[in-house]
Length: 187
Image (cartoon, rainbow, N blue to C red):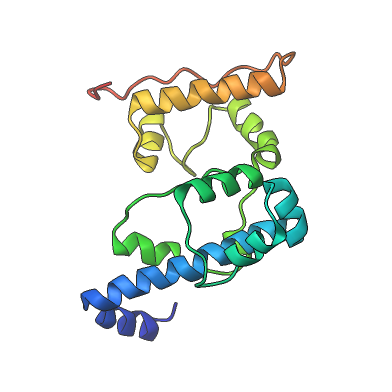
């Protein structure tokens, strides 16, 4: 986004009605656009997505229509499962919202399936532990980068170990390193 555009947008965002409409418009356009991007990334046409989703092709057409469909968390969760990706729904400040939508190109909205990510995840696990944050020096820094507590990171580590073991039960690969809480942190 250019400086001029951001300055203009910031002035407009100071009005509550505009902020609400701006966020709603991004959902109405962004969700269908990402669904379409994920489908195309996998080389699927609408009929193939419908088959995998066990819905009629008209449902896919409707859900990919910008500004026309309304989504439930359940519907989006079903689609996440079909695409084999995680669905993240959370409330964020506008600064983060704007940063998230800096790049709305189709390639920026793609998300690798778990199966496609598995080799990379295994490599990270077999290295120095799961590198949650790029360039993080310690587990405490990694935890802080994603906003998770030690117990949440430990639970994630345990879950990843189970998934890795299920996908490769004969592997002698080491598990994610045990995490130690940072000195003075509470569990």
